[in-house]
Image (cartoon, rainbow, N blue to C red; front, side, top):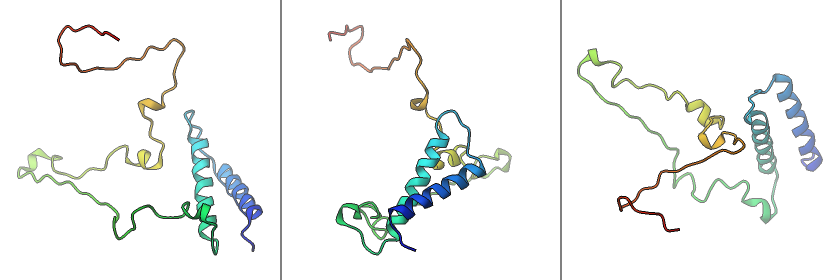
Amino acid sequence: WPLDEAALQAFVRAVEAEAAAAGLSRDAQNSVDYRLSLLRAFIYKFFLLSQPSLPPALASAVSNSLASAADRPVSTATQRVDVGDPALAPVGKQLPKLTARLQASGEAKFTSDASHVVRELCGAFVDTTAAHAGILN
């Protein structure tokens, strides 16, 4: 089975059809397009990794990163607070972050994701070292 551009396009179409048949999120923000673009990116990277060799222009697309796995192992973290009094529970109990799955999948919504409306007014807090000062420019 040759791994050429026609095979890549056929594979992408087949996986997109399978994903559509399985049912994609109907989130109004961007989940369908975002998930499909992730799907295409993963397929493309798999396609490149399955090639026996790549031209230099495409080699960076499959490199792990600037640091090797030995230089930067997978990060892990734990946080534990020991509380001597069990009446203070759940203080000290490890709890999963409620938004972890949404953030890891890229589906979490942030304030910068909100759509803008006509005649919307935006503001920002500005720190100053001078009290009652005027803005010159």
